Each structure stands twice: as C-alpha cells, then as structure tokens.
Amino acid sequence: MLNQGTKTVPADQRDPLATDEYLTVEEVAAMLKLAPKTVQNKISAGVFKRGVHYFKSEIVGVRFKRSAIVASIEQPAHERTHDHGIPMAKGYTLGR
Image (cartoon, rainbow, N blue to C red; front, side, top):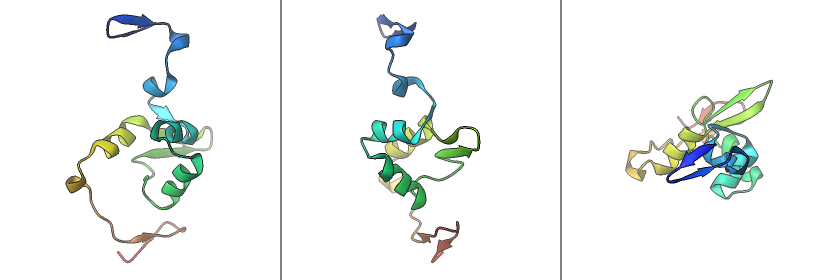
C-alpha cells in the first residue's frame, strides 16, 4: 500500500506511470500525451538524449528516466541550451 496524502491506495490500484522511475516508450508517450512513434522520432532527432533522458539495454530495450523527462519539461526556456546542429542517423551532429 502507498499513502498518498491522507488516503492509502492499495498497490494494485496505483497508477504505475505515477510511481515507476524507468518507463517504456509507450509509457512516456502516454505520460506526455503523444503517440509512441512521436517519442521514437524525438529520440532520432536528438530531443531525448541517450544517457540523459533514456537508456538502452539488450535485456529490456529503451527505458526513459522519469525524473529526467520531468526536469526537461519543467526547465525554463531561457535555461535550455540551443544546439543548432542537425542530428544525423550515424550519431554525429551536422553544423556543430
């Protein structure tokens, strides 16, 4: 059981998206109200960075770190770094 404020919620009734630190592509898509393909496209475009926002393992595949996703959403626009390069499929950035 988990105590949420003044009420206790049984473990089988908790929202897993609200408590799990590591999320699948589908769970991140649901959390951000995006299609899973959009999340995959953001990985390819370099919006989500490997080792920062997500990790990839042969055992479990791609897993996003909830705290990194939340931090990137809540970060003020003036604090974001603007990388004007174009991320390429082979892992380098064109124009940097």
